[in-house]
Length: 333
Image (tube, rainbow, N blue to C red):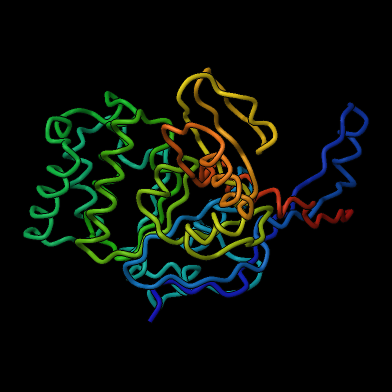
């Protein structure tokens, strides 16, 4: 059975309309107007056990709102979700111990206590057995390389150090479902790589289902074979990352190096970069074979490579395909 089932999930927020000026502020006290904003609109998907899926979208697309509904922090306006057989909105204790939501730049540990004391509190809250607690704490501490941090108060840790101990604490109950919302936000490259390696190892060792949001495409390409793309609250794409490139990556690039001086290549394709002996061409996928053949036949080619566009460009083009205004209605009250 799927670990996560999302069926027509919708979340609408009722937001007060505030106009400028003192008189308008007074009017709003007795006659306030609201607008309904659909943060998530009729989203459906399923996640199988052990899947690590990227959940992509620009700011305001509805990613965090969806994760909060799946973890029981928000009630859906319409639709239904099932996570490991539970309705998240019921927030049953059995459900809460088997699901973890980790949000970048959000602190859940006790600010003034040493990390070790916060972990002991987490053990008591989740009723983790002594043997399991010791084994997981030792294993995760080694994997995340945080042994020297356990005696420090949380407030004395850097952003990257806090993120690592937050992940350690959240995974002490060994949840089979993990929602990660920008877990590497603001971290340096070294810290990002360490957290990605840990997430990949946890998914493999525990068979956990992971839904990951990130604006760093390195996170997605390193961890996810499948991606779900949403924009303005609606789902645009659900499938393999390679399929996303095929569907929305309409252009490819050819990088060519030649012996001697490089001639004018504008007659072959659009030249995006150029040096004395090297050029990068951008062209539609269907023209790649013909242009490559002409370059090899007409030039003294030292090297020629054909590549897909960067995944960031593909994602941006995906967003553009669904760039339409959301449904917003104003209602007086």
